[in-house]
View 1: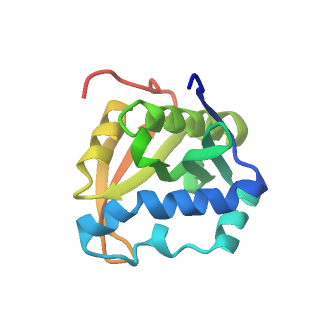
View 2: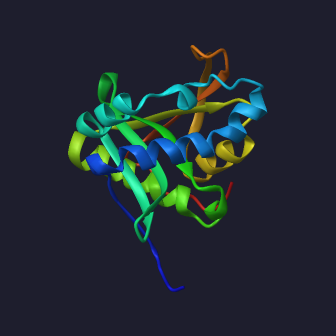
View 3: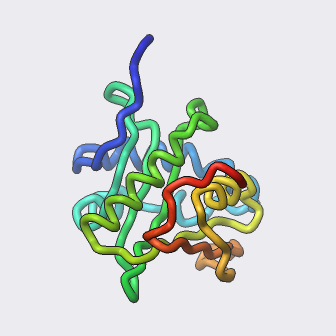
Length: 167
């Protein structure tokens, strides 16, 4: 096969592939919480297009196929907000999530001057929590999302190392 995965900024024409990938990837989260109305599963194509137009959206490509995606936007007080990190199930466990996370962090710092990064994940999402801990994120609280799922809020200073090898 010999193809390698390339991480780059998303283009407008990627919106449909990103939405389909997101729908596939977040099925396991929906099952974990018994809630198939979680935000990533009810997002519209128009909303996805708006995200690409206004925020930082990165994709991982294997040839022409989008196999991973992540988004970044600026929140309050110089905080870069990261969301909707997803990797195709057949490619999970190979470091692609960490690469996407690093790309969006770099983009938020270089293009938007973020001083820290914020993200959240469901309280039962152990794999996600492991990834974020390895990447240097620390829990700072929790909140219940509009979809009723309890979320763990995590933060990391923008000057912290991009990836920490111990969990």
